[in-house]
Image (cartoon, rainbow, N blue to C red; front, side, top):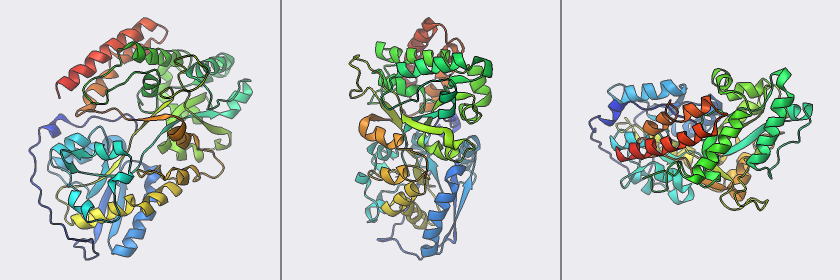
Length: 436
């Protein structure tokens, strides 16, 4: 979920630590620990996850302490623990960092535990998330969730400036037209039609690249097509959105979420993991969601296959390789990731499930706010897994620097700068993959 901070290069050079696993034939409550320490980075999920964990604690007798650590410090502390300090027993893994932790034997291999667990069948989960947390022939995390992206808009702003609300039939051209109308009408009020956080690729510009037929990373994880005509078409539309919306200087200083909640922008794109932020906002009654617009590539006036795409990602529940009681830790994450725990997670509005066919429970979790745009796109659009390679952050961070898309973010009125940035991005990603 969202743009991620790179893990230290030191981790990749770390000496692999041996791992000894003794797996009982079946899980049992005769554990050797009385507490399990868990780290996550999203405070919005704390209450729901703790409630589910407390149910497991009531059955197992093992207390679960969930600690929320902000994103940057989360990885700093985890890396420090991996380098010789103390890691939490259980923690979240993310696509940007999973390969490095798995390859250095810092995570507990779960295969034997899964084989002895009637509660978990990996075939029931989103394949991209399962595969993400696999290295070689070993599974190192259980799928916790998945997410999709939707368009959030403020009805009060659309009403004030006489612009029609977004619909699920919108194209990206429709979005640009509405954005431009609000920006022009709201000039004296300091209101913009849209704000795009270019640092958040998953819930923003990645989706346009794929809508227009390009890729950030090809399916075999060996190349990119962002420098192709299709990739450039998607990024040209991104340029138009930035040109007609809130300037990136304002976005960088304030953030898209704050601008939206302050009534200064009419639209943003956002991920399902952020619904609670807007559901509990003071002006939530004015807020509504629509599916992401689509790219009418063939001009036939309808959304065809592949023209409306949403990036999806998924976190994994992982266990440190030398956990004092690996069985207790595994039984905890199995409880979270089994069908009962996954449905509870969705029903409580914590986040969408990592297990397939649990989307309806999540869509009904927010009384008074229709969030079905996040689930409808699974049936009416195309999901693609968040692009990653072995060292994702090497090229992901470089794309945001001078010499690549930062030039285009800062000069959105010049199409040539964006076109050159796409060519540079092609080279950056290809070079990084070749050096992995």
